[in-house]
Image 1 (cartoon, rainbow, N blue to C red):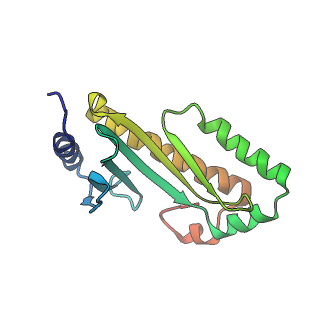
Image 2 (cartoon, rainbow, N blue to C red):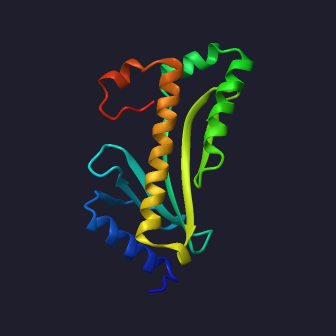
Length: 167
């Protein structure tokens, strides 16, 4: 079946997510034709969003992200510029050729507060496989960031008791 409308895309995506037993919440969003929040991986506390922005007909976007732990932000503040730039360069080099996109939200001091990932495709590429490839790639990218920050700065005290394991 060729998918040409937001309603068709919404229904098929919802069907696939429900078939795979994801907890699905529809988000009211005036800027999107549809906007879902789901648990991914299945049954975890981690969340991803799947939406169709009204300003970009035919586009489906999968989003997730991670907030940087306060302990990590404090350590970033104390890093000299050269070391901070090298740390960020390692991250950029690891992520640049992946099929998803990322955005590191930095403050005026060059301290990362959160990292967001997006995977985009159009209706002509909408398959269950493509949907789950996007979810998996975003999840792996998130895990990379958590691991990278934990390796560089140590596991934050909150994460040691947090089953979610956020950075």
